[in-house]
Amino acid sequence: MFSLRSLLQSRLGYRLFCTPALPFHTIACWRSSCTRGAGTLLARVLPAEECRCNVCASRNGFCNLCMCVICNKFDFEVNTCRWIGCDFCSHWTHTDCAIHNGQIGMGQSVKSSIGHAEMLFRCRACQRTSELLGWVKDVFQQCAPGWDRDALLRELEFVCKIFRLSEDAKGRVLFRKCLDLIESLRNAPADSINPRVILQALQGQSLTPSIFPG
Image (cartoon, rainbow, N blue to C red; front, side, top):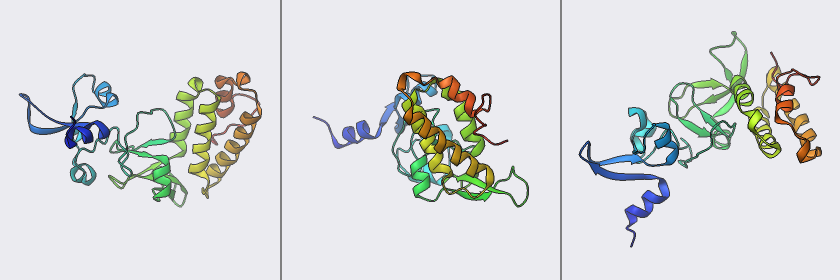
């Protein structure tokens, strides 16, 4: 018969355990994504990477490497626009959670020229911002060759969600071109979709204008 603790551990993905090498009642994450990432079959001790932020310190069993900072749900997906990693503290946030909680919006990027605003993601854990245009570009360049039509549609829809309220020229161009590609993909037979051709279009290497303004 399962105890309440066992039920919570199985649902949440972490365990309280004791070994000779670890203090009594050490909290660790046993999710496969974390143990693979650590290069070991053992659990990852929490807080992961000895993080001392307010989020990790105040949430018992929270793993910043596989749980959303906002909703606390864990996620195994990588290489996707539905799951944003902070450039500075490596905490993760679902794109939908970030949008619904005002963590994505226009702002002044430290990398951009004075007076130029763009779409930014603000991490709830460290409160620092990451620019989104370059991040989306990197995700598509690295991952699009392995996506089928459904995955491409899903990722393009997330990009549209992110840049829907963009006020800068590059963000608006990206939003419109994503809408056009979504329409084209929906009208094309599934077996006619070649992800590499789509990627070439996104990178401006075909007759289709680049989706990512320079």
